[in-house]
Amino acid sequence: QLSTDNCTEVAGTDVHGIVTGTSVAEGTVGNPTQYTLTVMNTGSTDATYNLEVSGITGWGTAQIEPAGAVTVPAGATSTVYVYLTPNDNAAGSNAAVLTLKSGANVIQTKTLTMNIAEASISTYTNSLLGSSIADFDVSQQSLITLLSLATILFVTVGTLFTATQSSSPARKKRETKKERK
Image (cartoon, rainbow, N blue to C red; front, side, top):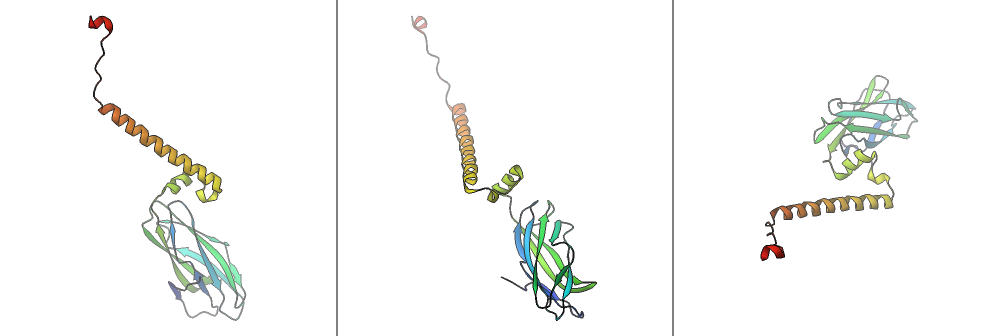
């Protein structure tokens, strides 16, 4: 679904174009989040565009693919991907500005918003295993889930056992047959 929300066209240039696509996404600290965007050449001649991301320095990093200039024929579109990776300084909601340029001329700006998700079990799993749990096949996901539940159950039972042992009254010492005589 293409959306022109959060877009501002800048007039006064001979090259025309517009960027549409994802403008709001949810991400987690340390993990890149993909924004899929479409650059549309609305002019009557082929155009070469450059994309730049600004306003992210304090809270994360950005990467654009393909890197460098993108040439789009008149009336055509090209898909580009922007990856924003929030760092520990990221707030709950963060904004970056994507600028579409042709040479030195600014054609359009678009605000990209990233909302930071709370850390979850999968975030910790990703940092331990080096990949997302979604990257595993179903049997591996089931095994990880089963091991996680077994660990939680083991810790819970151990905690309850320890708590009941320390709170039970002391046992009376039983006398031997010799002591009873």
